[in-house]
Amino acid sequence: MQNPRLTESLAGTRAVMPLVIGAAPFGIIFGTLAQSSGLSAWSAIAFSAVVFAGSAQFVALGLVAAGTAVPLIVLTTFVVNLRHLLYSASLVPHVRHLSSPWKALNGNRRASGAVPRRPALGEL
Image (cartoon, rainbow, N blue to C red; front, side, top):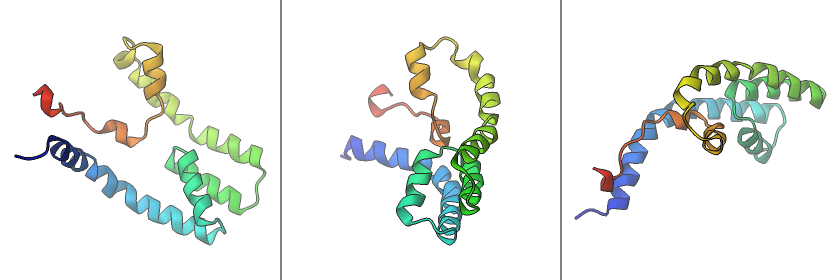
């Protein structure tokens, strides 16, 4: 008999694999550009951990490499990310019934939030 945790882990891995395949090239491209812009490996990793939008990462990296002032970089990435207001506005009808803490907890998701949830083995 198989271990239920292993079975669920493998199911989760299969569910996110399309996202990994799609995101890996962007990570490689960003890492290459970050290195050619003079960022250390740790700085590039920190950049990816702090900046949640891929397009903003590339824009901000170009501005950092050009020696742009930090307030202008922050303002530019803010403007680039205004599109997320439109995304969130389209979700309001679907999340209106949720409590405020739940919305806040789930408000900062990446593409991994788009992976459909499968019922756990015990829920079947």
